[in-house]
Every structure is written in C-alpha cells, then in structure tokens.
Amino acid sequence: MRSYQPTGTPQEQEAIRRWHEAAYAELRARDTETVSYFDFEFVVPPTVFPPQPVSHLLGRSVLAETRATDRVLDLGTGSGVNAVLAASISDDVLGVDVNPDAVDCARANAERNGLAARFRQSDLFDGADGRFDLVVFDPPFRWFPARDMLERATTDEDYATMRRFAGEVGAHLAPGGRVLLFFGTSGDLGYLDHLIDETSLRRETVATETLHRADTSVDYVVYRLTTP
Image 1 (tube, rainbow, N blue to C red):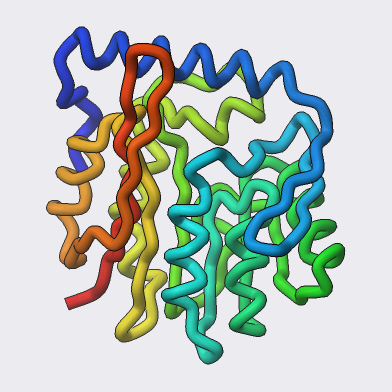
Image 2 (image 1 turned 30 degrees about the horizontal axis):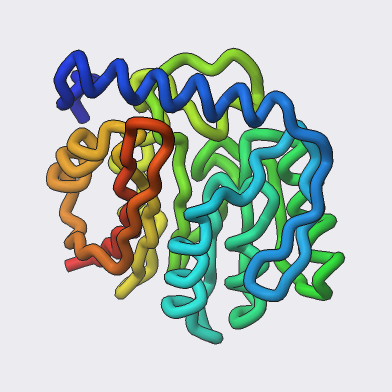
C-alpha cells in the first residue's frame, strides 16, 4: 500500500482541520455520560469516545447486516455500541480497541445490557484470532498525529492504521465474509476509496447522511465490502 498523500485541496484540508479541532475541544470537555442507543443504555467515561449524532447510520447497518450465525469482529469498539448491537443477534462477537479504557467501558456496557460480547485490547487485528463473517470498523477519520489516547479514536497519523486495515482485512474474512466500514468527508474519503480500490474487495454504499457544523457540511457513508 502506498504512503499517504492527501487527495483534497489545501482549502479542503484546512476545513477538515478546523472541524477536527472543534470536535476535539468538545470531546475534552465531556464528563461521564449515559447514552441511549437503539434501546440500549451505555455509560461512557470522558476517556472513551462516545456515540456521535451520526453513529446511528452504522448502527442501523449493523442491525441489518448481522446474522445469528455470524462470527463478528468490531474493530475500534469504543464504548461497545456496535458490538452490543451485533451481540443482540449473534452470540459470537468480539470487540477490540487500542484504548484499554474503551475495552473496560465496552465490557461493562455489554454486561449492563445483558449481552455476552467479548472484549480485548488490540491494535487492529493483533488480538483478533481466526476469521470472521462480519467485520465492523468505525475508524479514525483524520490523518493527524494524536495528542492522547482519546484522540486516537479520531486521528490516525498518515492513515497508517487504515493502510494496515486495507492490507490485512482479507486475511481475516471467512469465505463470503463482509465488512461494514463507516467514514465521512471530515476525513479524506477519496484516499479511503483509493485504498479499497487497491484490494480485491467489492464496495457498495449502504447508507449516507449529511451533517452541518457552522459553515461546513460533512457527508457520511457506510460501505459494505465483500469478497469476490
């Protein structure tokens, strides 16, 4: 996989940076909060990235895509929202996150909702054993270096994690496996498209939504990736 080169104009890159700084300031100002999400309840401490106003876009896709027989991997599980949704359908769900606070938070939230998902600290696929029928990935959108573990939920310096994901995901998919991948134009969506095009996976768009902040609009998308 080639190293990262931005696909947007300098003006577009600057707009993304402004969006990110505003969002990061809001994250840093958070206290522990209790969030309702698809009839489940989640307690999210300030060191863990919480569900966002457009998170339901991926959540609906998880509910629609998960099968009872699926072995499911939720990459970057955060507070565990998508792992919990998948575990309401499948009894074989693993959620992983590089942030140990997120792993503890997600585990507690699964227990709070009476569901048996498993959680493990892992950098991408490092702690994910075997192959999966469904991989759910809500990755960091921006290519900036992270200032702390909380910001790692939203930034991936030079898209190193995204490039790893594109190069490794095929080896972790079972025959007929699928991926739900969430992204938006508050990151470099064009670069993500290039990475996917360099794999053997087929891409289709299953959900979209637009969110507005001040003078900026962001388009969000859920891709469904499938093996040939």
